[in-house]
Amino acid sequence: MISGDEREHRRIAARGVTLPPYSLGAAPLGNLYRPMEEQQAIAVIDQAVQAGFTHIDTAPHYGFGLSESRLGRALPAHPEISVSTKVGRLLVPIDADERAPVRFGFANAPDLKPVFDYSYDGLMRSFEASCERLGIERVAIVFAHDLGEMTHAEQNESYWREFCEGGMRALAELKAAGRVGAIGLGVNEVAVCERALSALDLDVFLLAGRYTLLEQAPLDSLLPQCAQRGVSLIAASPFNSGILAGAEGAGPAYYNYEPAPEAIVQKVRRIQSVCERYRVPVAAAALQFPAAHPQVVSVLAGFSRAEEVRSARRWIDTPIPPSLWDELKEHGLLHPGAPCPT
Image (cartoon, rainbow, N blue to C red):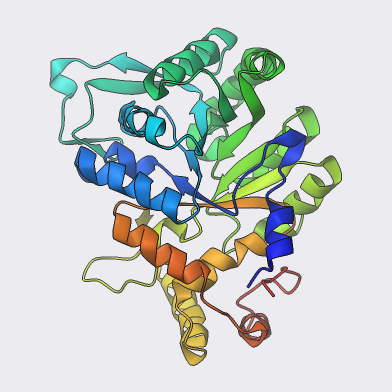
């Protein structure tokens, strides 16, 4: 496990923003895939604070404002919570014929839909609307959401130019005015982070699913560049959309928000086999592994029930012998240069 001194060191993010070692991702609070009662959402937040997850990351996209609104209603009871949110999509009304039980992965959401807008005006409008839903005037971090070729394909270059020429100026002004503590990208791909490092002055990346027990490509280029530039990383989606959570159910295991391909399923089974020999839940290894890298200031995971948060706290506190990490490396299941918890 990470020692107390190491955990304290990891809490110091670039440019003066501090984060706990583990943070709560609030996409489930926006009815991700299935409806959630308001009381259930508040219980998740309450339990997260008790478990030490005192930073919560949300976005307008999560339930089309629902996640931010629910978090906003919980914040008065928890002044210790720090918040990050995202910009890059504006919420606009839908027509009656666009209504559906699930839209963009969110169930029973308000009659709004997200429209990409990375312009100066679009980011400012998005930020002010988020603050209104959250009921606060300042947030710890703002991320430009889902830039990159994976999301935008043939429109990627035009959105990138729009952000660099307008949206980035909005983020810099918000930071200079003290409305945000740090600025960065919230994305799912390494390439756009590396591109941003060479072109933009950012503080932190929220990178989902790319630095996990299952894949460590950022070790080869991105993380060394981050260390050189003094840019922090929040390692999000440590379970890779669920496949590393360790639950065996009747349905398919999910990876990258879709049913996992067979090669991924087989790799996870090999990792799980090693963990079982040490009587360590694979979910415990999945949560603890990313936190060991010195550039990672927090590991961000989402939960839909208070019981899941309690389980996560137990996994974080589970002792893991160094020999487990050694064996994963020996079997080629972990990058040979990966820092591991001690």
